[in-house]
Length: 158
Image (cartoon, rainbow, N blue to C red; front, side):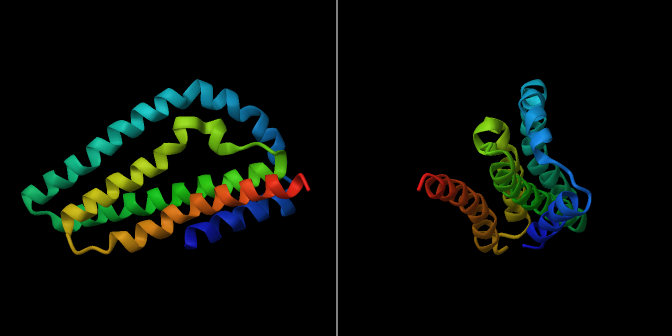
C-alpha cells in the first residue's frame, strides 16, 4: 500500500507545511461534481470497455509484454485512485465534516470500475495471477474509510 503512504505524505505536506485549507476545496467540490460528473462517468465507462478490448487485441497479435504492462499500469492506477478517494474521504470528513462518499455519488465508483477492468484484463493475460489477494487489500481500504467516518460520527455524539 505504498499508494496510501504517498497520498498521506502529500496531504501532510499540503496541510502542515504549505497551510492548505481543505475546507475551501470542499466548498467547490459539489459544483465540480455536478458539472463534470456525467462526463467522468462516460469516459470511465468507455475506458472500462476499451481496456479489455485492447488487451484482447494485444493478446491476439502476440504482444504479451505490452499487454501485461498496460494491464499492470491500469491496475496500479485503479489501486491508487481507490486509495486516493478513501483517504480523501477521511480527510474531508475530519477537515470539513463532509462525507465525500455521499457527495461524489456514482462518480465514486470510477476507481472501482478501473480496478475491476484491469483485474479482468490481467486475468486474460494470466489466469493464475493472484488477483484475489491484491483486490482484497484494495477493496478493504474503502471499507476502513467508511468505518472511520461512521465511527467518528458515533464517537462525536458522546
